[in-house]
Image (cartoon, rainbow, N blue to C red):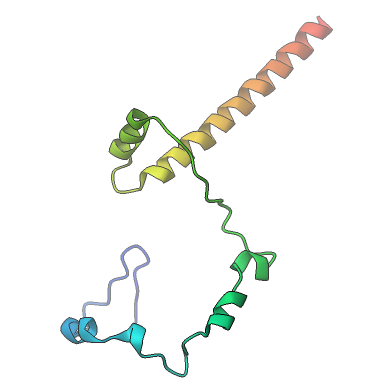
Length: 118
């Protein structure tokens, strides 16, 4: 089967599978544990730990935080973000700010060195 990476379309020669959505919606999956996903006991649930604790090398590279922003700032980022997500846009803006700060600091250091040698 040929798959396009951008939108994962099937080849035109292959028919898309027919899904009975009414039957899927009617199934009570949460209430029917099976051999592959048995119901946890309270003791087992109490022993669960975050994946980052179990696999020390596992990291998404991001940390969940709580931050207070002005309503106007938040509304502006939501408006600019479109479909990407405003949190992603805020993160990109902060990342660019760090890069600009690093360039400014490097430039200041070069100027200091040049003034010192002059």
